[in-house]
Image 1 (tube, rainbow, N blue to C red):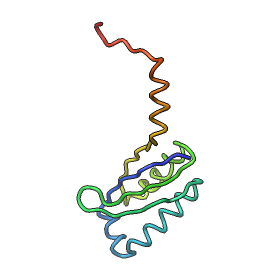
Image 2 (cartoon, rainbow, N blue to C red):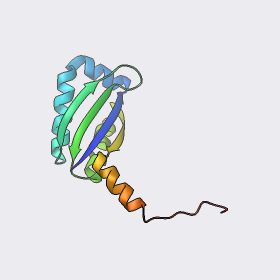
Image 3 (cartoon, rainbow, N blue to C red):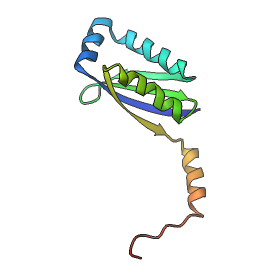
Length: 108
C-alpha cells in the first residue's frame, strides 16, 4: 500500500452540504469511499484558506488513488488534487536507481 495526500476544496454546493451534515459526516463518507477501494483512512482534517480539507490515506495502488477522488469530484461537491507520498526509504531506492541513469540535456 502507498500513502496519498488528497487536498480538496468544496464547491458552493458542497459547502452547503457540509453545513447541513457536519464535519464528522464528511469524514465518515470519505472513510467509506476509501475502504470501498481497498484502502484505509489515516486522517481527515479541515483547514482555512484555499484548501478546505486534507485526507491522508493508505491505498493499494495509483488506480485506487485516482478512482476515489474522481468519484467524489463527479458528485459536483468537491475539487481535489492528489499527492503521492514517498518515505525516506523510497527516496533511498530512487537514489540507488538514479546512480545508474544518465540524461543528456538539449543542445549538449
